Length: 221
Image (cartoon, rainbow, N blue to C red; front, top):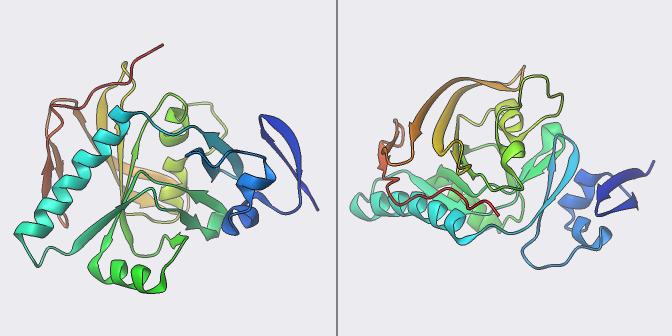
């Protein structure tokens, strides 16, 4: 059976969105440019979003630098990170492109040796999303009364232990670490937040402090 997708135009799809995404065919089927446009499957829906702005990427870089610094100063530091890596959530037929993934040294070696294009969620310890105007509602916990699913639900459903959400919305400008995923209900049971300007303190097993003094909200147009 074909599937109907909405992304600029109506398209009759030759296979499910997830299967097309897994085969890297979805962008071409939807006639989308290969220019940094992100195509993800969130809650079973195809989500197309433009590439992020420089401020967004600078936030990701700041987080990544803290992991790199820990690795350089302590050879036994057990965590590695990678940006904009396709992640397959096979159990729920979703496919995300987190801004940053953190995994163990062992899982990093396995992924590199296998030259994976789609990283399985097993072994991921932390995922990071930084909001943009076009993606903010897909990254956050769903609003009350909203029936759709977001990445917050998906990450919890597949058991990602830690989800760090950097919300650059000028009305929010907060960073929240979600923990204790409930895989049955697809929600995180615990969280702690910091305002921009306050240091984000990632607990063990990471034990990192991330400064946010230079983080900026997005500019409304």
